[in-house]
Amino acid sequence: MKNRGYYGDYGGAFLPEILVATFDELETAFEKIKNDPDFWKEYETLMSTYSCRATPLTFAQNLTREFGGAKIYIKREDLNHTGAHKANNVMGQGLLVKRMGKKRVIAETGAGQHGVATATMAAKFGFDCTIYMGEVDVLRQRPNVFWMEQLGATVVPVTDGTRILKDAINEAFRDWVTHMDTTHYVLGTACGPHPFPEMVSYFQSIIGKEARQQILAAEGKLPKRVYACVGGGSNAMGLFSGFFNDPVELVGVEAGGKGLDSGMHASRLKSKDASCGIAQGYKTYFLQDSDGQMKETSSISAGLDYVGVSPILSAMHDKGTARFESATDEEVIAALKLTMKKEGIIPALESAHAFAQAFKEAPTLSRQDVIIINQSGRGDKDIFTVADAVDDPKWKEFIIKKAKEYHA
Figure 1: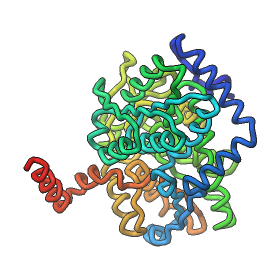
Figure 2: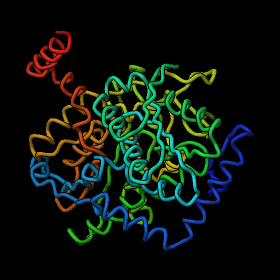
Figure 3: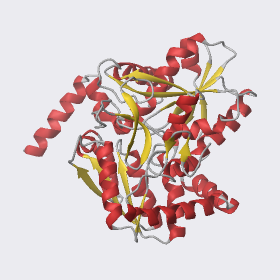
């Protein structure tokens, strides 16, 4: 039972005293809009007129035929404005920021999709915007960095620590502490101190609401299973929330990296390398050593390369109300290539983790069963990483040629 941000043993708000008043203000504002039916109508109208909602539920006929088991449907969050599910959360928080009267927003980002979405929201609503991004992620997600800056955001590469998502989150909190009166932190996933896990899940629930209606319209029945990748957990919470009260198996897929036995992964709920701890303002499973020091993570996908996980998903893991698996980098690339060739759809590397697990399990199900895969984002942002992973010679030739042109 949730008690001020707790989900079972996980969650809470572990804050420095200087931030307590700011979080109280945020919680009060969120509770007010959550209990205002006119707000959700305003939110849905914004998303339908600005962000292409409802996103389609696509029947993957060729993939279904390929595996010969359950009928495969894909929830197309890649067709959401800015190319991922991230817009659902940031547009909702943007409306909240307007009501709170603040003029500046900050955010962290790993894969860059949350950064692009936040920069887009800031441009639309007229907010100043600063995005924190680990230096490693800046290099592997350069196209998204380019678009953030073109949208008017200031992108700050974070050089501390392992220079990935957790370090970007730390830096964003440091900024917020010094600019609380004017600034709102648009946290991108269902993690962090209360009320962020609940608030992000609230806005992302639009995915599950739509998917449930769409599958009933298409098939006249509920799916056997639904699949979503799990980094922090926002897109998984979004899809899962539509089926909490139904006899539907919820499957979250973490980043298996080089394999769970290698130590080079980002699996908190499937691996044995994680334990319960408190960091970044909340209590959950973290990849940490016996001294509570955070371990390095490894994933081909920048958006799943995170040391913690949503406290809501941690509670679901312990209760057995959701099942968690992992997919290796190799499996992810194979699933991505197959989806492109069979359906003409290019999932983000993050999303491809869910595809990989669904592909393992679809053949074991009946032809009368239906499954849904949440495609949380589109793969064009991953062009550098994917091209390297498939060792494409034409891509290498192109990069070498462009480098020579720049140095000419």
